[in-house]
Length: 167
Ligand SMILES: [Zn+2]
Image (cartoon, rainbow, N blue to C red; front, top):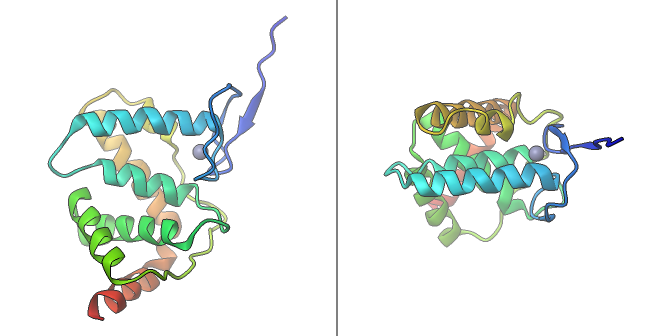
C-alpha cells in the first residue's frame, strides 16, 4: 500500500506531498512550494507584460517566506515592492526601478521581523487559477494578502525609502 507523506511549507504552512524537488536555501520554504514558485516564475517571465508582473511574484514570495536569518535586503526590498504596488499603485516595472535606485544609494537595510502570519493565500492558489487573466488576478490577490500581513510596517517602509532617496 502506497502512503503519501506531506510536509508543511514554513512560509505559510502550505501542505504538499513530499517530493524529491531540489532545495533552495534562499527562502524559508519547502522544496515542493519552491517548485510551484519556479513554475510561476516561468509563467510570469513568459507573459512578458509591459507592467512586469513578475516583480509582484518575486516580492510576495520573498515576503511570505521571510526568515529572520536572511540578509536584510531581501525582506526590505520585498516590502518596498509590495508597499509601492498596494499603497502607491506602482506597476511591477516601477517597483523594480525603485529597487535599482535604492541599491545604488545604500548597502545597509533595516531588519523587518517576520510576523506570525504572512498572508492568507499561497502560490498554490495562484497556480490553481487558469493561465491568463484569472491567474494574473490570483497573483495580485495573493500578493495583496502578503502585504496585508506586513502592512503594520507601512510607515517604516515609507520612511526607509524617503531616507535613502533624500540622501
Ligand atoms: Zn511556501
